[in-house]
Image 1 (cartoon, rainbow, N blue to C red):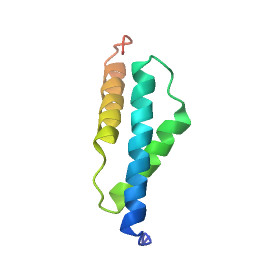
Image 2: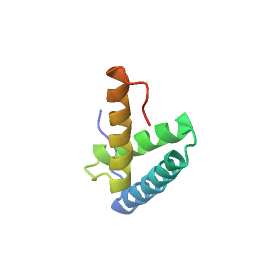
Image 3: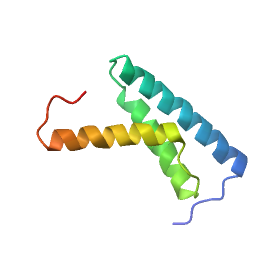
Image 4: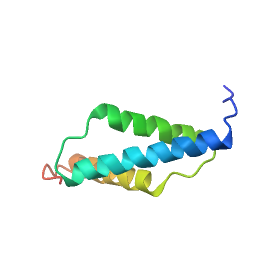
Length: 83
């Protein structure tokens, strides 16, 4: 399946929105709040779009995904004290 070309300015807008969403998720995490699943799904979808078009992930997105991977690994190792 061929992906349609998306103008660079639109991809930059998606990257900006992904950064804002990742920052919000990080703020919620720092405050001890639950992260709504739909926020994370939106972040993943935006990240996929960027990746599909060869655009590097914003640093905040990388931080969120690294934290999620760390937590998933801790859970799979049986550490239920993930924080």
